[in-house]
Length: 318
Ligand code: CUA
Image: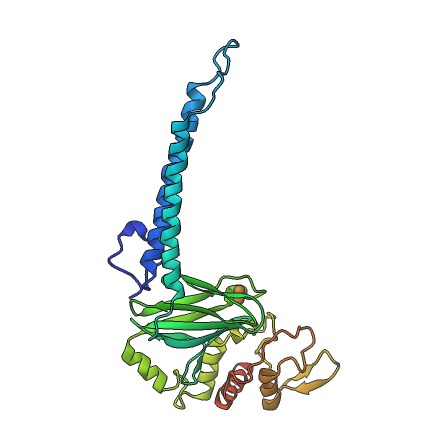
């Protein structure tokens, strides 16, 4: 249900309105847009008209001495003044709503890092996808592990900076089920454009089911499949290719069982132990030709998930 059938076609150029904020945000946007169009037309129209009407026709034409007109000056000061106060009040009231989290909100912690998002649920689930129930307020407490990022979901009309060293808070309530994208809207390095995550708005029943099965990471998922899922969801994909191409980090193609040379002159064979260390303490040894930029996944992945990633790397190495 990504399309909103009630919206008329003329407004199609905006993303669908999928949160309780969306129509307010769009309303203010259109109000300002229409005002600008009206005033642009009036001002430029008057300018063109005066240029033509009062142009210098002969060499004897003289510009008359104009001393001002109080009536006109008051009109063009007071009317825009009232409009600006209206825009401010409208914006301020909505902005306060954006900042006031309802007490019954569902708590989700958001961590941004180069270059992925992870979502931590009170039940202990760490997910690469933001799964939320429809019609329920969700509070996001956000922080960054490294540099400035920004959390943006177009359909919800929400965007807030995600900072290292302090929390920022954002909330929303989705009005319909469907899938959207979280995008990073603060330039944060090489793979900034790949710093995306899926938002899934589901029914309360589906949400409860998702929580009770450990966020889709259950024991019934085969290791290599789970590894593939984690590879895509947890941001590995932003830096490690599967086709041999060099991105930010080494490719996974042909990686398993091969000798790796490190920047400190040492070397090791990429076996299970090496891969586990590389995931948990990635910058202890850095492969030649690369920089120590990978975040640690200590505490982010459990043992089964680490095994799953290793199995996945094995499966794509052959
Ligand atoms: Cu994170 Cu751009």
